Image (tube, rainbow, N blue to C red; front, side, top):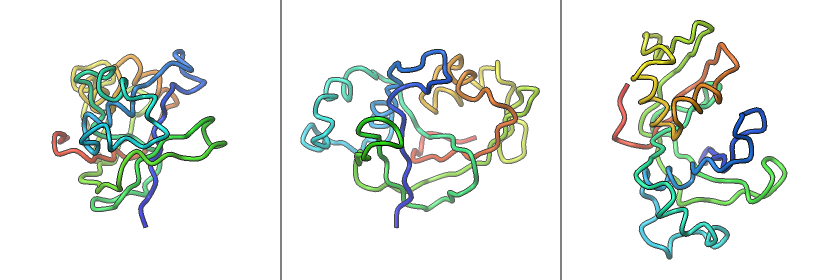
Length: 165
């Protein structure tokens, strides 16, 4: 049975950009390429057609970062979004289930150091941190604001062959 990964379509209420579009769906589609044509778009998302193919431009979301430790390479996941209010509405499948290609453990400590698989990766203000943020579908500024409750411990869950840390 596939594990569910639900993407936010809007920034969280504690984020300064709360309520604004994240375009995570569009960035996910640009990365994973699960939707080959307009016919593959779920009916509930037909209104976002322009967003799917135009709004995200070349931006991509190659992975997602989640708290906890429940994913391993080879797991199958079902990418979804909420049809309305998060946790209070039905979920919409974005595409057929996909395979998780890579998983890394991540920690962001109170000194704003990013550690991947227990190896120092970057300081939160570095170019490497910006690469990590962009691969997660965020600008570095939004990444810092999204992951601001430190220390943060979780996993980078990747469905793309374009990422390696």
